[in-house]
Image (cartoon, rainbow, N blue to C red; front, side, top):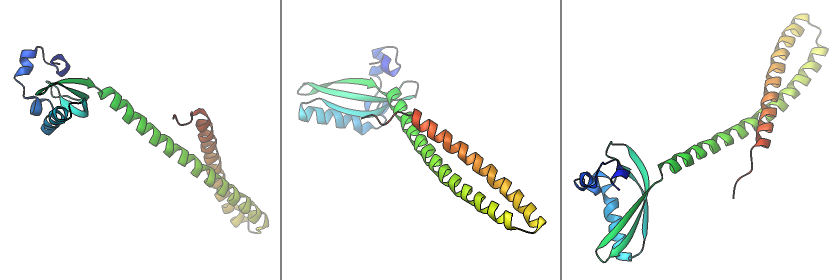
Length: 168
């Protein structure tokens, strides 16, 4: 227990007030003790502990009543697990944003293809060289945007096919 918190010996830890020196919230220790003694059942709480060096770890604390007036506490460091879970949540949000961007790219690609077709029809009917020149320049920009959006849509579709479905 002492080494878990970064102390060299148990004697060193005995001088630390667990409620305020280890638990980030001093009330949590009292809560778990009271609950465990009242229910005489195993109680569990996830909380943040402060190690000797001041760093924080996320722990799952299991408390078991061993006698009518004492409990045994077993901590489990779940910091890595929580960090990985948060990374997974961020990854899932990014995946959702990427899917949405892909859908937007497909929609814009389709719209710009329609604009390009209409512009070509309009340019074919134009008698003015100046109008046709400016129209060609504008059409070139629309074509570039369409090509970019098409590439983005294809990439999004390929990535979506690589991604496994949700896990039950």
